[in-house]
Length: 316
Image (cartoon, rainbow, N blue to C red; front, top):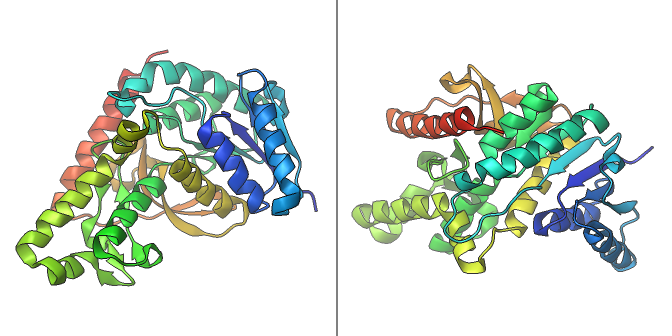
């Protein structure tokens, strides 16, 4: 049986890390494309030379020719300008819109049957643009945001409670920006509400302040890393994209919060927002619509408004 073909567009830190993760799990043959001369060739040569030590037998190709993505089953897009100190995700909209427009035309031409996962910021607007250019059905195009934001929320909770991250479940909805919506009432440790554990540790009054701090840190987690490294995160975004890719290629049916096109769900029509979805061999196979509390609905609507303003203002 032929292996799946995976095309990674963007050979930066995220693209290189993602190639390594995918190779380690034998997800398929990998093509890494980038416009920077020799960069993708070097990264994939480095990865190939590690294959005897790590035991993956795959075709690993680096290229400056976009035609190499032809026939890909899955395309993951990380291309675009990364955040720098003092920049928000939204500051990237104009320059990255030009990049994603061109990339989307290439995907439409060379990989018309592929599933597409985008990571480029501002994420929600870039996925919307990619869908507009490619015309792909909504099940085959999605953005990586909620998986990363939820993982960050879970990591901070585990650190605060001194428990295993493997036992923490957390869910973040909405746009991939400072208005994202961490759903506090769904956060739990092996089924035990996080709020209960915080109150048990600190008492009710202090526990609420601790939870508020966890929510705030989650919303600004990307900026925290930019401030420390002077560039964007790459291991955690690559890991989040890998989780989505694996669920598609191995038909795992994971319920993951991904940036999906809403057509009436959550009262939103025609915009991409982070919501829980069943991700499998059919891509976005099901959108799970939660009944939000009035407070959650207010926060979600604020996030929707921010996404709409970005999409509506986007010019090429």
